[in-house]
Amino acid sequence: MKLRIEPDVRPVVTSALALSGAVGVFALAFGVLAVGAGASVWQTCALSFFAFTGASQMSAMSIVSTGGTVSAALGSGLLLAARNGVYGLALSPYFGESLGKRLLAAHFVIDETTAMMTAQTNPRLQKIAFWTTAIALFSLWNLGTLIGAVLGGSIDPQTYGLDVGFTAAYITMLVPHLRTKNGRIAAAGGGLLSVALAPLLPVGLPILVSGLAIFVGVKPQRVPASV
Amino acid sequence: MNLSWTLVIWLSVGAYAFKMLGFVVVGSRTLPDVLARCLMLIPAALLGAMVLNGTFTDAQSIVIDERAIGLLVAVVAAWRKLPLIVVVVLAATTTAILRLV
Image (cartoon, rainbow over all chains, first blue to last red; front, side, top):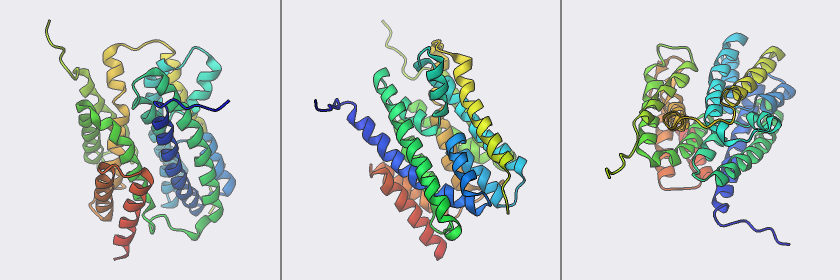
């Protein structure tokens, strides 16, 4: 029997794979950065496997590499990781009762899987988007980390503009969310808040606080026509 | 320089704890409409924050440097619907070249 991919599933799978491929390239950058910060190859790989939350891993390693303390690195990493808890709040209703499945799914609740899932409107495609992204991204994130860590200190991420590569990936993930007016207001509001608060709060915290921009959603987007 | 395993272990434990938290608090209940609508905007707000914060801040100061041009290139490329990897490479390369100048 031939494997048939339904037409509506194809774009979901394609974009999940494209995103994962690009994230794999950043994993390389993370591996390089972590080893440069003094982590061993094992420690670097353990972070990608068990912590599995790119921006947190990246920020923790940047702080260590700029001479920050372990607690400062941990604090910033955890602040950035806290948003995954909020993603979990949003995604939770879509996952079934099975505790085992929920415990497993939880590990994959990150920016990319949430963005891909919430960009879909029907429950079947949401589930496909989540799991395809989760599996492909987890595999490539860990593979990329390993290669980057082994290549080690021979590459300086800043020289190749890899830091901006991250930002560019976030932009492409943001695009589907800009289709609605509320999405645009939330993105702009969150962005401006995070910059305005940067001088006032410790690194990592402005990103979390920018989540307050979601309250534009309190007002329904379209007022239904009166009957 | 050696990195402590303490950081690796606590970041891993903490990250998973946060991921679990949302799933445990809500369970499989359906959220009220207003709340669900707000929560679905979280990725938009935080992605917007990571883009602008990652471009215009350095530690605790607001700065405009080569990254702003990189961001501009990425926005135009994404807007023209170029593939993700092309967007990323264009933005990174532009920034890298500007840093050389």
